[in-house]
Image: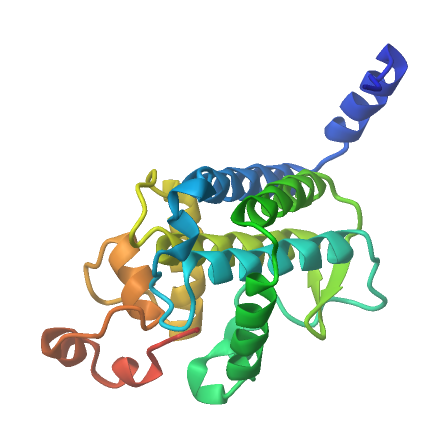
Length: 242
């Protein structure tokens, strides 16, 4: 096994010192959420990956593969400088992803189902997720480029990290429906709430806790008649993202 020399270790420290506070905080939070996902699927031999999730189309295996694609996309984005200024931020990035917009989700779901089934073993998929997500989180803790390009848009690196945290947090709640799992970090849930408020156009006028807001705001749990009465016309905007 190759080891880093003291000089190499020093260069890593120097890189860490160059990370901005915003990027560093977001990168560490992304690392925490990715680690929770890894921990939740850490025993694939027990049949964990065959459990259902809050996404009606996918098992844990399929949702984990979807998350793997997200981590791979993050690696590409972090290493690819974008030309031109940001055209979306951490909130407006999500506007095309409402289910009512018909964003091609069915084709992606079918691809994920087929690709996830092609792995020779559950362990192979889990190991690839752990390796890829760890490196993606590592890259997120370093400001490799100021503006990244992804999904046809350009974002500030810190905003891009926020989108990764939001997606990973929502899918962690999906993934662990039937699994024993740790609680989501409060800061990760707060970031999802901020995005949902931004898409709603106003702070939520109901006293939902953060998890309830995530599940109802994304359509995982249906609004009750009382919810609709309090929300009024705002109920027509929900689900705010898919």
